[in-house]
Length: 299
Image 1 (cartoon, rainbow, N blue to C red):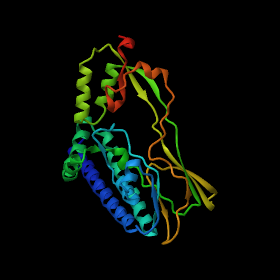
Image 2: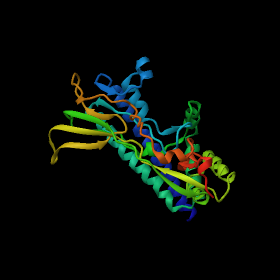
Image 3: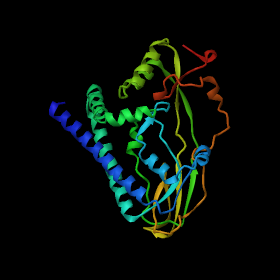
Image 4: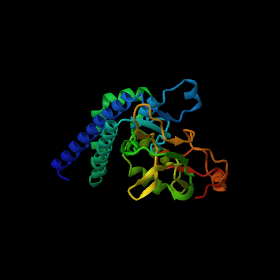
């Protein structure tokens, strides 16, 4: 690809990222200004003991674009909640969601580049945001989590009668894979210190050892919404709600009916026989590849 085309992609990526941050700042400022309106966000026991402000936690979740050092890079923060806001705040959140879509399109446009060129463009983005990155690393944060950057702030333009939150069940499939296939999966990802570490781990085991790749759908938080009257052609709506949902409220107005749920999905106690054969900790967390336990390793 020509140098001018790469420069254009880099320019678009940086501009769209800056625009997303700008609209996110505006949205969060407006949500904070609506503090007189009702809000509920699920809190952990520790947060309850600390009397954590629910609206403040929602703002922290909306701003969570970076993942923690201790987390899988594909893991995203999730928390149920309902936050009352003004009509002006809803407009700001809609603008923010549009900016997120533009940033996502700019990142996906990098797929036409060679891996080395794409890495350079993304690294440029991190360097331009180095002041942000340094501050976040001090708090234990690491690289930009694209999934968290892409996802919309959930919102409803009409106040519903009821919102019912449910956690979907987690599925898990274990597939045998080779060292070579695992290496290709890592090489397809943006090069980071974590990826380099995992490539090094692969070099320390035999090329003919079979590994296990765990595929699964993490529990998803869903909101079952009931409106007082048909919105369009329906009265009910089911939506993904990984973050607290914004709803329009007037001063003194109550939140829609809801049943509080825990901030984390319920733990399944059902044992999976296939899990017994693989080690507890992944060998390659970025692509969720495990080694089999010693008695089950095959060459």
